[in-house]
Image 1 (spheres, one colour):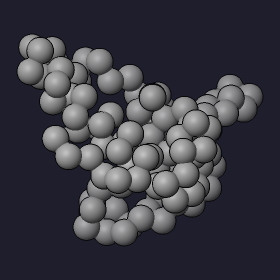
Image 2 (tube, one colour; image 1 turned 90 degrees about the horizontal axis):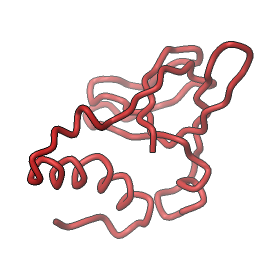
Image 3 (cartoon, helix red, strand yellow; image 1 turned 180 degrees about the horizontal axis):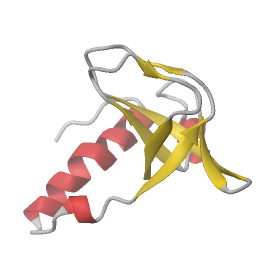
Image 4 (cartoon, helix red, strand yellow; image 1 turned 135 degrees about the horizontal axis):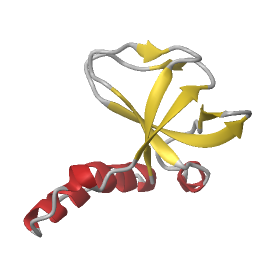
Length: 108
């Protein structure tokens, strides 16, 4: 398997593609192993239509809810992955998400 050259891109690709593939080879069903947490998006997030994107997010507990705050930065900045608690998946046919949207976060 080839991974991207940028550190954070490589980590995300490994988590989303390679790890489920290796688990499938071991006879495990990775869908049962992926933990997702519902959260409210803290700000608008833009996305390019036509490709699936994964945005790193920091989860914050506010009152009785969990909010997902995007951790923005280039894919070569490992700091963005260190500060992230999870990944927000944006589908390929979506142009972005609005503040306050209920989203599922893939825990890291």
